[in-house]
Each structure stands twice: as structure tokens, then as C-alpha cells.
Length: 399
Image (cartoon, rainbow, N blue to C red; front, side, top):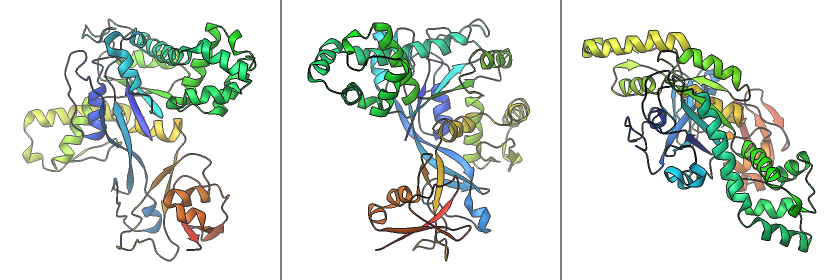
């Protein structure tokens, strides 16, 4: 699973990325500080299953704090996109291609309107962030359209002559964008296009097709960054009303990064996504640091219940993609061979079955599947049993 972080230059994308991953990323107050994509590991948060068994887990990957489990996901922060990116402006074609394998997009915007179309810093409130939402939609749609149109006439003629199924042939061409045959079949039917006569499809038809496929393969939510600046909250409310098709999350990447770094230094107790921070060693903090942390608590955490960074990641994975977290365990014991309790937690798409989970754990477990057991209820279930978020499941196999 890959989460793509996108947006125009200088809106705080790299700060958001670093706050989510604590990976090194160049952060600067000028356009195109990022050229090559940054890649790192972020984490989604959920209530850990260990609290239901009155124990403490020992994660093999990720971590657990105060019985909140943090499961790793891969993040990629691509360079800033500008209007005309699909035509190559600002190296846009290269940056868009970096997004091909992304499963979901987080669009970071400067909700305070302090960054112009080119990614240059301007007076707060002098740019309408609604333009940024619209511009990225256009760039992504035109990017998809360009890929579809490449050699379209020759492709459509060949499909017609060979009487091939258009959704199968086109899916092969678009596989790099994670487009499936089913998606194409549904889109063609929705647009009422004649699958037998692709040569009759107009440019407008292809653009509508590109839009549908983009929405299906690159679902997107919007991190309204710089929410602490003047006028940002008013813009946030207006954008949420103007674009009801998107989820907007108030966000302050700078605050999250500061809290993560203070926590890493042992100065505060802070669980990502929490509405509170706790000073651990006030005597080690100077007045400037104390003032900064107090400001984050009162002006961001108290107002918005979090910095928004963790909530954005959680919403992208659990809401937009509909994934769920499943823990392997045993009814007789929760420990692995090394004595670690509930060491693993896997993210599976909605609709996953006990058999799907068995294959996720190991191919042999899937091939030799006998049954599964719900560790909480001790109920035995079959291979078609639908799993639920935070289930703890034991797989019983023939080997």
C-alpha cells in the first residue's frame, strides 16, 4: 500500500511528510525544495487489541503507546505540482509519474491562502485555496487522459478489427495506474459508450473516462495545512461546503513535527493523534520552548482536537480505502515462539475473508486452510467468514 502526498510547491507537503515519518526531507520556504520524491514509513493508529486481553503487546513492526497500535504504511512525497504539470511544466510529467503506484492521495493545501499558484509565499489571505483544489483535479485528469490518448487511434482500430473486449485491452494498457478490467467495464457502461466502436469515442468521452478512472484508482482527501494562520478557519469552512465530495481535515504539519521531535527527545509525553501533550522535564525546556508547546496545546490541539496529521493518515487508509486491521493470535496463547504478545497486525481491504487472511500470513496456510477461530469469542469460522476491523484470528491449517 502506498500513500501519495501531493500539492503545489511550498504548502507544507515535505513538513507533513517529515512529521508523519520523521524521515529526512528538505524543508524550505521556496518552490521546488523537493525535486526527487521522498519515501518513508508513516503509521496508522487504532485501538490495540491487547487492551481487550488485559495485556501489553510487543509489536514486531510499528509500535504501541498507551494501548494505541501504530501500523506502518509506505508514504511518498512527490515534488510540487503547478498548473500545466501534465504538459511538463515544472517537470510535472516526471512528478506525476512518481504517483503511478499510489493507492490513495493526500492533497496538502495552504488553507490560509499564503502561497500563490507558482508556490511563492505571498501575503496571508491573498490567494483562494479553492483554486488549488480545482487545479489538482484538472492536472490529474489530464494526466490520465494523456496516457489513454497515447496511440489511441491505432489502439482503437486494432481492438475493433480483432473484435477484442475493450475493457480487457485497455486495462492492460492502464495497469500501471492500477486500473482493472472491472473498473473499465463499469466506466464504459456508466458513460454509455459503445464498447464495439471505440473509434467513435470523442475527446470529451475520453476525458470523462479519465476522470472516472482517476477517482476510482486515486481516491483523495485534503489536508488543510496552516490551519493556525489568520483566516484559515473561515477558508476551511467555505471549502468544506464548496467541495462536499472531499473530506477536509484541519492540519498543522509544523506543530506535529515539533511535537514528534520533542517526544523523541524525551521532553514530552505525546501519542500521535492525541489532543493533549504532557511535559516530562519542564526544567530542561527554555522559555521559548515552553511558550511554543503551550501555543500548540491552546491554539491547535484544544481547538482542533489534534494537529490533523495522524487523522489524515487514518482517514486515508481506514475511510477512503476502507482497510481494516487484523491481528493474528491463538485461543490458547497470544504469544509467538519468541514470547512476543500480538506481535503482528496486518492491513486488509474491506471484504477480506478468513481465507484471505490465511494467505496474507503465508501461502501454505492458505493452501492447507482447515478453519479459523475468532480469538475473542472462541468461535470457529470457515474460509468465507468476513473479517471485521480489529479482529484477532487464529488460522488452523493441515500442516
